Length: 329
Image (cartoon, rainbow, N blue to C red; front, side, top):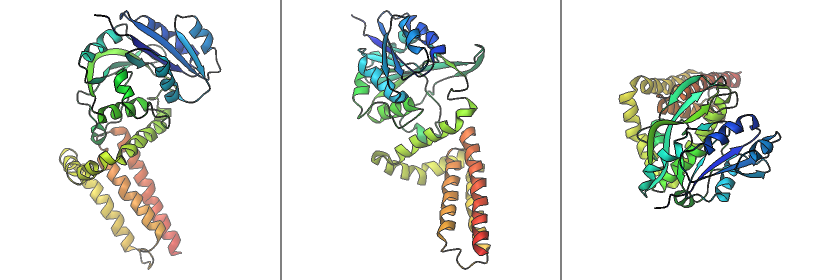
């Protein structure tokens, strides 16, 4: 039986100093039938010169972002399966061989693997393992992490209404995988570190990029919130299972959330100001406090987002007091 072709797509933008590592790791795959495609997203460094040194297909586009680069790479590729590899990362030589095995099941749309995180000095930093249970409802359970590269079935990708979301600046792979699950495709995981993730000042997990990271994850959540197929489930979940699960697993945060809302409401009522119930700005800020408290409760099991919403809550409570006190003068 003839082996299917696998395309390894490397989108890059001004990463010439990392690109050779990525290309060499792709060409070093033990799987015998691959093609490697480099999509240059308008780089101004010597990316083209580096790519031309290797037996790869090279395409240049004006700078349009990583999602467009990935979509174009997929369009130019011919593989029955493909993987998008960031230009600053590397693949284990057995990545394709091991991730393609679960694809024998025609219902599997994409396969994940574990990742080793390392720094600029090639020192080990951390090991990221894929979640055992990963479904279209994972967002409701406080999911926020990246996937690493995933092997994707082209038929699954083609079943989507559109490819990688060009409006997302990061986590476009996470968004795409959730949409594959919504379409009914299944996923599988290989619990071996078949990917090396390089940590540097521009990488997603770097502290300097955390705000961008948070915005993109929030954008994905809002995107699914407003999907008609999720709206009823989400409403039901938040009114029943969501609150119950949080109360059981994280009672302190649940009760603190109730306490925060109550405290804010009591404080507003305690102000001797006739217009407090009618002031639109007060209503707006109080609504923000309620929403942020709900988000804090919902994401209480995630340290980063929990701390973020805690800080937001403190700022909003201060803004509420300032708004009322200024209006009373």
